[in-house]
Image (cartoon, rainbow, N blue to C red):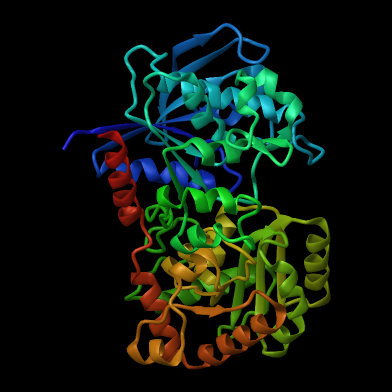
Amino acid sequence: MARIRVLAAASEVYPLVKTGGLADVAGALPKALAAEDVAVTTLVPGYPAVMQALPNAETALSLDDLFGGSARVLRGNAAALDVFVLDAPHLFARAGNPYMGPDGRDWNDNAFRFAAFAQVAARIAGGAMRGYQPDLVHAHDWQAGLVPAYLHYAGGSVPPSVITAHNLAFQGLFPREVLPALGLPPDAYSVDGVEYYGNVGYLKAGLQFADRITTVSPTYAQEITTPQDGMGLDGLLRRRASVLSGILNGIDVDVWNPATDTYIASNYDAEHLAARAANTAALQQRLGLDADPNALCIGVISRLTEQKGLDLLIDVLGHVLSTGAQLAMLGAGDGALERTFSGAAKANPGRIGVVIGYDEPLAHQIQAGASALLVPSRFEPCGLTQLCALRYGAVPVVARVGGLADTVIHANEMALAAGVATGIQFAPPAAEPLEHALAHTAELFRDRTAWSRMQANGMRADVSWRRPAHRYANLYRELAV
């Protein structure tokens, strides 16, 4: 079987730069694909953190003028990843968040920053770099959405392309006035091109022109073809249903491994769950919660947004407290939600602990110490925190949407009797069903035999990239023939 060479284009790659799950996927999938005889080289923008991680990278391609300045493509290896880095200081040499400035607003030149990124990916795919010719291109999310469009309008012999939509809510929409500067022909601005409701749609462009479309769970792939969840792209996705598939994400099971995790107080596995109690005690101490080994400790690790359903948790906080449960929260996002949860922690010392921001060690400590992990999302393409929760024995309590529905086996009577349940699902994502789910969680937690069985089931589940990588490899081989 011939080796496949894939050029991936991702605007963030863990551990070089991360704002969300896209980085985790872009960082972990290439490693898993190596076992499938697929060699991935990932193009990533040259943000300061990325440049610092590759001090000895070699110049592989020079560009005299890339959207207003000179640039070069560096080639190197970092964190066991083969990478190309687009070193364009006028576009990417900015500290902080890759997409927005210190004021919390998107950079006003994002249209050109990520058009440049996509254009360079298309150039490399087209053979611009001596000694490197990929068999196909895999673009991730709207930031790389123009890659298939550039390949399409280049004409001639170009490699096939795949685009993965990690979250359809983020589409990369810009005014039509940017089109002349993008290097696309005028006729690209059409309903069968990059036009999207009077704007230029970067994700729409990718969905229109890629040879294959994937998203990150089978249920989400179905949901986005409906008006309710299609974010205005459902018609296009229904027309292209024959090339659309949902492939579940995995997690890096070396990074997320309670048996070896250096961030947690006590290592353990499914056969030694008793050792997990020390992590609960450490988490309670870290967040100022009452030292109670018998308390149901509900963990939340999330962006604090309406999509994630965290406003629903506010509506049922009184019920959570009435059951004697504790809440351990790590997250950031909407200012009003941040203030509400911080206020709740101050009003309920010992019962609610909240850290605003993101803290990688604390995320591991919550997974290792919480009894349950709550993910009440209104929609969720895949979700990674519930996969980590399964791995760590924090029983997931999730809305029955997207990848959450695909990865958690609900503890109904039959699943409990068969000994296969791994968590609790609820639907629809609303306050009353969430309250019922939390009541069910508290009831199951009191049955320590059933609870321990669910923990062990989750910890033995295969949440790695092994199966997803095999599916991606098969998809690549179908395209590369």
